[in-house]
Image 1: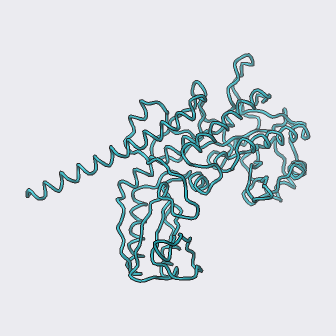
Image 2 (image 1 turned 135 degrees about the horizontal axis):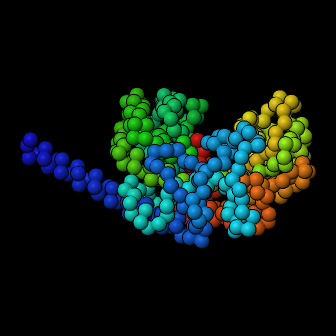
Length: 398
């Protein structure tokens, strides 16, 4: 082995170590900010790297995630399942319906153990590439090209959302490119989302994206500098861990006592009277009229989805109102509204508002849940993930 080869190997090792140390310092700062936002809530949890975000709750001792109310965890089909005895005199712990996807202990010791760390998120610029949550590849065409010239890139499906932007000059604003976008563009960027609820983008996926960008650049033709897949994969893992710290869904269960059931037609009538509309997702959605945004949903207590047909013939022991905290612009207000709807529906259906152990939820318990929602919303904003924003919808989708 020549001295030149030895020198190149040594330089490569120094570069990799430098990137790891830099990223470690960056995420340490971000996790400190998250820890500050959650200081008064006691929230923390555990998750292995590379796994999709799981629904966990911390509140004192660890509570195992036995509730299953979303696509990540289907509900139990047996409404008469056995439950553990509940000590009515014990201090109230928030119910398992608070599906807190919190992926790592926020202590200083755990922060120091992480090596692949994410950058501090900057405020998001609307309608532009988001380099904090996306792997971005810039193409410099030899001459301005139309959106059709990169059709192969826009139609590609590689496992994570892809976006393409173009601008007519360095001073022009970015424009989202679609196959029918008119005009020609002097600069083009491809953007691969680094993390969503299905997990972080793997190095293999990022390498596939870089190859795709290279093929597009060769066909245009255009010059481009490929990113380092190792560094981008490390950013993806770290970003996913941070998002898992803040990924919270809230569920309030309406349950009939004993063996009694709610007929589908009765439930549909009460749900629609409360403002819900049956959606294609198998749930009833409560949609804000001004924005068309789903504030919260009503799902079957069982795993079966709601459809017009099943509602005509089937019955259910209950239903679950679901609030996806990162998805709404004002999570606390949405929770307050959902709570009132849940109480009214429970009263109308002669049912009880309960937690996952079938323990009734009183005002004190609901206030504790509200505090969790408020803390999560504050922590999201503290790291520049505004609830309900395009950045939040991207990171907490999938």
